[in-house]
Length: 195
Image (tube, rainbow, N blue to C red; front, top):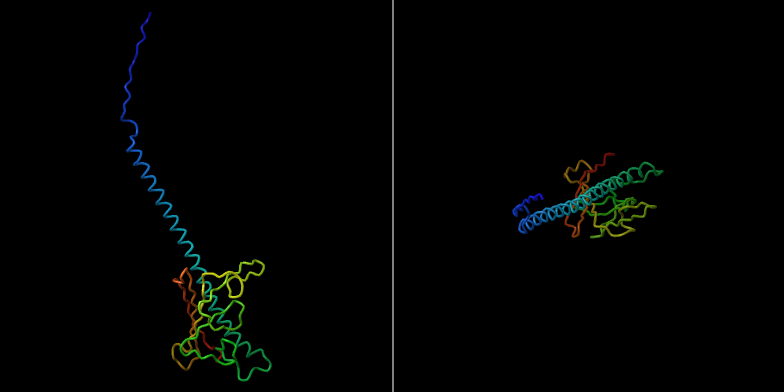
């Protein structure tokens, strides 16, 4: 009979992971995952802020353009109403009173996209968002849900104090945020270029 040879193998115990190494690896992995989630959360907040800022910039620009439309409509009234009004409608009739509005210091107004005149400001009134896709009204004061945006049109008469020119400074300020702590202000000078 042949003798079978036996071989003994000794397992090395230092090749495996100890409990301490496993705990350290899990804590490093957990720290990385938490940091990634925090970074994603911060990025999402920043995206929301930037979205609101872009909307605010567009609403401020709309305020400037609507004010310019009021001025232009005053000129068109002088050209198209037969016979022309006497005296002619001044370029700076903002509220539809028929006389030039005196804004020697500042006058504050609000306006909707479909208004033909500025309306005296009702302080703190929020723009509403109407998401009815049939009417597509967007941001306005009449219908919809209150948004986080308020818009103020500020008009200063003769801002450069050059009394030889008829001009007004128009500032459109949109405030937004939970406490209206953010704002965007756009400014332009409108001239009575028909003179």
